[in-house]
Length: 190
Image (cartoon, rainbow, N blue to C red; front, side):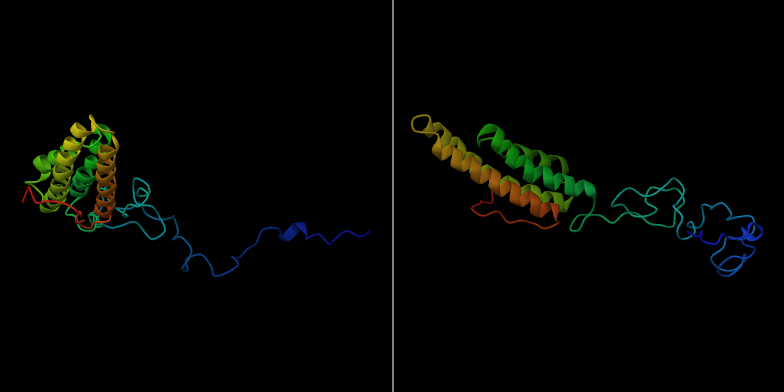
């Protein structure tokens, strides 16, 4: 067998780059890149000072360098806090109905309405919709729970399931920035 030819030891290090030469685009300037300043964003391809943005975040958010802007609020909301309170109203109503077997489904929407209702029209609209639905079905659950002590617990379980299902559906719609109109609801609060 024969060995493949070996390159000579004299020319192991290249004397010129394979494409272009130093000082041309694609190469750093002599002495390297200057440190970034607070006035301008970092050069393309390099992370901003302080590291990469959080997953799903916007580049530059929370960095003191400026020039990047603030994150956009969720669609249909003025701020993330409005979205949080809308979700508390809807999912909290479902959770309250689940925990109490129906009668206390109105508590979380009432809390969302009282705490955030006067500050945000979006949070107020979600809280009022959830509150109207949960008040009606909490009354029905309370009456049926009282009556079911004499009968089977089936009617109160059905009411609880209705409160949970529609509370979860409304919460999912609120998470997408949409307003959900509850079926079989009354307008106690305007």
